[in-house]
Amino acid sequence: MGQMMRCAVWYGQDDLRLEQRPVPRVGPGEVLVKVAFCGICGTDLHALAGKPMTKGFVPGHILGHEYSGVVTAIGAGVTTMSQGQHVVGSDGMPCGKCIQCRNGAMRYCVQPVRTKEGAWAEYIAVPEGCVYPLPEGISLELGAMAEPVANAINTIQSSPIDLQDTVLIVGAGTIGLLLVQLAKQRGAGMVIVSEPNTMKRTLAKELGASVTVDPVQEDLLDVVAQITGGVGVDVAIEAVGLPQTVQQCIAAARRGGTVMIHGWAEPHVEVPLRPHEMIAKLLTIQGIIGRCWDKALKMLGDLQVRLLITRHFPLEEIHQAVEFMRAGQGVKVLIAP
Image (cartoon, rainbow, N blue to C red; front, side):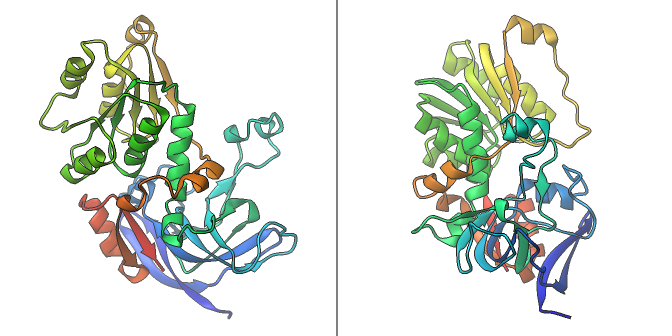
């Protein structure tokens, strides 16, 4: 048997096991990355709660997709990576073969290539196209934040946010707090953030939010009405993944406004909609997913990303890290294998 590695493997609800597995062999077109840091994402927590968001969560799967590391081996045919290179990684890439890819709409790829395993492990083997060189001067710690940054940039780029617009962001997790910064950079005049966690509301204010709302203690729609003179917000971004927060965004949007749904809900969750309201208000409702990797890597040093990293945990303490996040004690926790 070859070299062994430590990893955290998901088997179902509250069943996460630390195991020893062989270090992956690198196939043609693949690179082997020694993982430096990997974040805990909300989708990981959903899986551990027994509510996986995608079919990719199969029992026996190593979790983790927000990672940085160092290339330690390259497979045959790899041309853009070299040993010793610092990289950040994705859990998939466009197939390049489906009708969407052939038409140049690769962000809408219908059969993306997925990595075999996740990065809550000492090593991960991935297709060459799933990793990106980390710019000089950017630490591996910040590099592990590239994936959520790439997500947030894609949302803002896809939005109609214009100069002096009023923007509502519901949810101040990692994505929501990145959206606050990017909306301000885009020119938003007023950014309202709704978040029940006191620590996250405080951080949202520090990062540029104009107004923060505790939706448990305050009526969000009343606050929006007071701020906008009853008109509503120009753009509402949902970054939680709950039916009630989607409904809040729809109700808060002005006539002719845009609602962007970024938060992942469980696959079976349904949101009651009133077609009359959508038509009468001329609303645009848009689901959003995707990553802008090149811009994320260029902006890692410009955004207040380190403020979002609450704590590091070694891989051996992965269970404590998960409970720390479940308790709402942190924004982003990084695992250091």
